[in-house]
Amino acid sequence: MGRIERLRRNKVADAFIDIFDWYPSHYSKEERKLLRKLDVTILIFACLSFFCKYLDQTNITNAYVSGLKEDLNAGGNDLNYFNVAYYTAYVVGQWPLIALQSKPRLAPYLLPTMEIIWAILTFCQARVTKVWHLYVLRALLGFFSAPSFGGTHLVLGSWYKQEELFKRAGVWFMGNSVGQMFSGYLQAAAYNNLNGVNGYSGWKWLFIINGIITLPISFLGFAVFPGLINSPKKWYFSIEEWSLAKSRLSHNQGSGDNGVSFKTIKSVVRKPMFWICVTTYICMIQAHYWEGYMVLWLKADTKLSISLINILPTFSYLIAALSSWLGTTLAGKVSRPGLWTFQASCSIFSLILMNIWNIPNGLKFFAFYFTGLSSMASPVFYSWLNSTMRDNPAERALIISTCMTMGYCTYIWVPLFTFPTVEAPRFPHGYPPSLVFAVAEWGITFFGMWYMGRKAIKGSDESLSVSEESLEGVRTPEVEEKDREFEEVGPAQVVTKARSTAVLS
Image 1: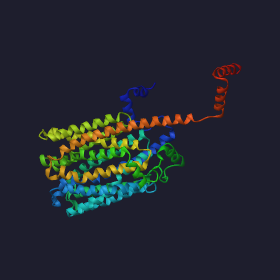
Image 2: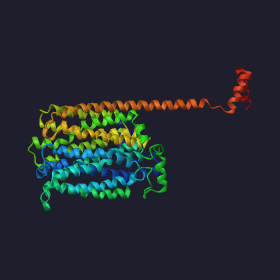
Image 3: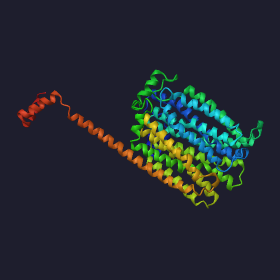
Image 4: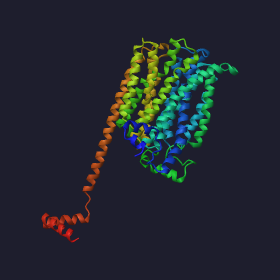
């Protein structure tokens, strides 16, 4: 027995080794080659696209504390309203754009096209001179960002097996936190080195650089992004690889291949999974809203430089990135309810500290950083959703888009009452509800994992029972002949005859 095999006998060591075992030895050489090709194309583009999406989405907060507020005479709750404009349009775009993403022929081109539009809109934000200009541009950016999250989830769930999906989703989710982290570093560098260059303020250079980063990613997407598994074959797949990709996930080619329809909507809203997921995501959105406001606390209650105000929150995003990767990867190997409870504990404990508020600044730093560990919530939740609903891509797409729609519907207006910018950084009406939402988020999903797991076991038992019952009705000519013989001569003679036949043979 080799060293690796001995280590795998220990559950903890086995889970750790499995994190890095992306191409298992029990896979055929052809399947391992196919997986590598999928990772180089789908996963790399998905990660870069998600990184750009969050870079373009969250840069408004960094720009706001780096001169935008003063240059545009913004104030009051304008930062809230920028987010309201973005997420209102984001919600409006969910169903129509993800419905388009679920169409096999459109799937390879939709996200790369959106990427080009993000770049153009980000460039435009560097030219604004009025606050209302930003409202319009943020709304347009929100609308065209709508299919990024749900659409990519749909594609990943289409190509990868469950155990493969968890590992890839963890890496993909890192793009969220890395994008936010990188925005802080970019703004600090732009403020220190480019402020005033060619007549542009440092915060305007942030938008320009973000656009320059985003645009090339779209061209990469047009070249390599394959869309759904039932989309037209991409140029880099051989016929054999294409057949293998479909055959190894043949159970995914179910009733959802033609995209979302009214029949899909009617079917899915009757399922408990729909309501469990939607309710959970609403709670998740509200429970974690406060995590992006560390910069407002630093600007209001500390005397740090603009550069440090942009840089210090990035450590929270670094923790969040590692947490997203590790949590999602382990979700395919260890107890998902256990991981879910761990992340909820981090969030709840941090929120308890923020509710107390009158604590040393060191504890506030700890709360903002420690809650980064709870960032595995979204990737674990969506990986569970993907694996539970993987047999019907259309229903999966509808649940994901509805989660996003309903979750961000509350994101639009609830923070205006719970986290208005004028109440920063204390937010007396924000932290108490966030704590309640964090507890509810944990409880609903914990119940959902138990309920759907129990339902899956029950379904398997029922399928086995049906199979046994179906065999009871099968009567071959040989069986009927034995029955007649049994009735005519009696059981004793049948046994005697069978023994004689056995001896003679």
